[in-house]
Amino acid sequence: KVDDNTNVFTDTIATNSISLRDIAELGVGLSYYTKVRTQNNAFYSNWVTTENFSIDRYYRFSGNGAWNDPSNWEKSYDNVNWIGADVVPSSASATAITIQNGQSVVVNNDMTANSVTVKAGGNLILNEAANVNISSLTLESNSGATATLLDNYSTPTIRATVQQYVDAGRNWYVSSPVSVASYTVLDKGTSVVEFNEVTKNWDPVASGNLTPGKGYIQV
Image: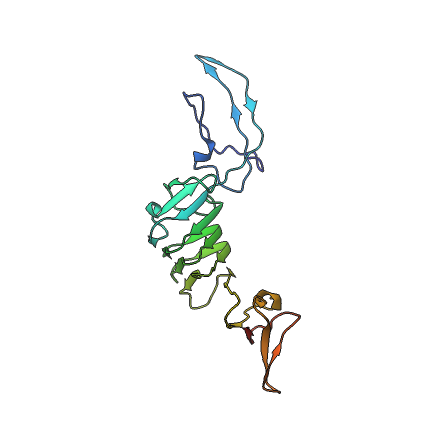
């Protein structure tokens, strides 16, 4: 491993090639190099050191049920071609994790993850008994569905980026949960309005950020 020069994996192979990405000891997000030499009976060549490299592994949920069941997962090295996974993804083994539309995954055991994306129509259910640490969680939304996160904790502990699909042609009633959302995130129709308690009118919003907890309508 490059950062501390520790030996992670050693092997002797009889063939001319080995797939480094399949070596479980190589974690994602780290930099490695290899040292290789050939053997002919009792004679060895000089060591050859390769350039630094890193490993990317992508995982996606392919069933319904428990997070900690390896048979529910597929993995990919290019996020295009997929094969069955032999281990459950974690922050050490997975660059990014995806829960697809129509699938529901239940986390009953402690887990860590670098990046989890729940596609529109997907469900992520967190059991209160599980200690969950997700560095980046995104809940997506489109015209047909919205991702769902069910957090059974008595005190919420999960931070997420939450998308909500809105379009023109209907009124959307929204209350912003954050203080840094510009009014333009709702400006998909003809206007954004807020209720004026003094005049009892709906006034247009044309600048600034949305007030957390206050109701707005995208018209």
